[in-house]
Amino acid sequence: MNRRLTRKYFYSFLAVSVIALLVLSCSPGSQITPIVGASGSTAPTATKADWETKWEQVLEEARKERQVVIYGGFTAPTRIALMEAFSQRYGLDLDITIGRGSEIGQKLMREHRAGLKVADAVVNGRTTMEMELKPAGIFGSLEPLFLLPEVKDPRGWFGGQLPLTDDKLILTPTENVDPPIAINTSMVKREEITSMRDFLNPRWKGKIAMDNPTIGSGLNWFAAFTEILDYDFMRALAKMEPATTSDKRLMAEWIARGKYPVAIAPGSVETITELIDLGAPVSVFVPKEGANISSGSGTTSYVANAPHPNATKLFINWLLSKEGQTVFSRASGLPSARLDVPNDHIPPFRVRQPGVNYVRTAGEEYLRTLPEKQRMAREIFGGLFR
Image 1 (cartoon, one colour):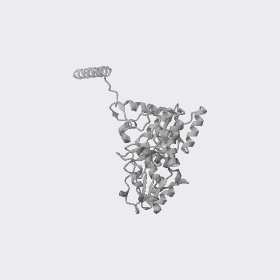
Image 2 (tube, rainbow, N blue to C red; image 1 turned 90 degrees about the horizontal axis):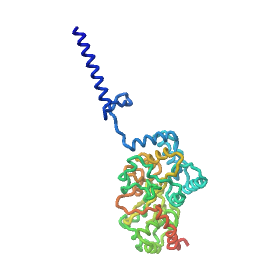
Image 3 (cartoon, rainbow, N blue to C red; image 1 turned 180 degrees about the vertical axis):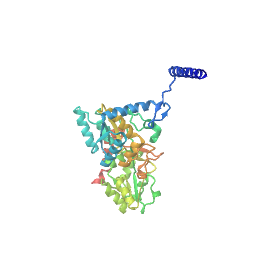
Image 4 (tube, rainbow, N blue to C red; image 1 turned 180 degrees about the horizontal axis):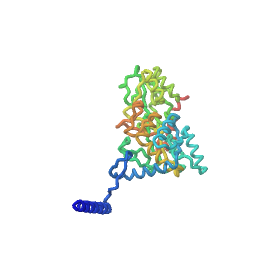
């Protein structure tokens, strides 16, 4: 009899407990459904951030698109490094067509005129993108594509701002310092030249090597320093009778061998670095007035109505992340504007420093004034080529 009562009370208690649990589970705000982890253990429910939800959606759709097509004005090693890293990370094909910046621009223009949608994004030199592709209406706004907090946070970028143009069509995550001065250290002491105006000292007349200021990187230097200084300085410099050349390697060798003790806009950083590594008495540096910077081949834009929109969004966020910029920087030799990307593989004189005056030689406003500056360069220095 006692056993029967005990069983009766036990089953009554069990029934009441089950009913109570059901009531609790149905009450507003109650969540007791467990989340099963990869190991089979349970974990408490985690609330995802809005960007995480969107990122998962983009990733899911990108995998359906299976690939992203990029046109790049960079080297084959950079192409291989990007393809391998991106594919390993996301399992998508990264189809990259590479060529000279102008060739990439012409290809895009032909496809645009024919109404063809092939490329998803462009990673190229900035001049072609600013002067030809953007005016043709090829690019779409980059800003809606940014999802990752590390990409959007301006504190992660040099100067405290995302290097995005005002119209949001072009982004320059890589920028080179083009050091304006080189010296032969066995002939010239570093403290003897701290300013560009030091070159106007009569002792340097006929002893200065200079990149041709009417074209290419020499013109970039001329254009930048007419803003930092003025045309009067350039006229005074021309009277110092500098030896001008468009052969960047030759000029670097002139300095290394001591044919000329000093150089302005010394050009080929690869040759200079190679000579320094071999022990040549060469030093390259920035004067107190500052330097010009160029974007190199890392300038990035999104092709409007891209055929693989989700894969493109995935790629651009990855490229601008610490991981993507590290891969690109190490492969291309271009310093990143991201503050968390290491520059230990880049010569120190190519990396921007806080507090230094830099003039960008690839922006829209600069490029608009370039023809007039080129005319002035020919007028001021033209006599040196006769």
